[in-house]
Amino acid sequence: MDSYDKTISEIRKFNRFYTVNMGFLDAGYLETEYSVAETRILFEIKTHKTCIQSDIVKTLHMDKSYLSRMIKNFYKNGLIEKKKSDEDKRATYIKLTEKGIQETEKLIELTNDQIKTKINGLSSDKCHELCNALNTVISILGKEE
Picture (spheres, rainbow, N blue to C red):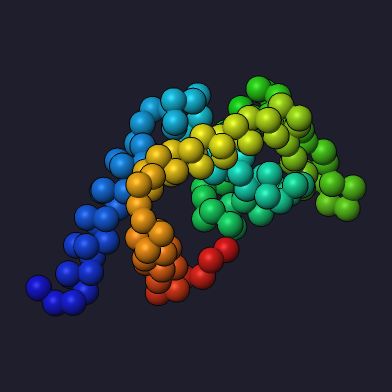
């Protein structure tokens, strides 16, 4: 097995561990009504404050149709509001409603609590080691967005 095959095998092993360990494959992420993808999209909208769908497509490398279906559901459920661009009638700005902000902040808090539970009991040195390892992965495989 060459170094690429070994690396592929180790990345896949880590992905299997991480997706199950963090509950990413559960029907409702963190026992909520939202999937991991929906949670991430709400986080992106919150981060951008106001954006157009293509901003999210670019950031998350996501299929436009898949995102459109989620945006439609967010709108129907009162999580986002839409406003047509004055400059470009093809573009629609989206932003979180007050309900959307509250839901997203709840999801962020649940995610932070989940991570805190996972790392609870680690020594300061182990936390530092873990942070360094995570930053190493980011620096090797790509840039932090």
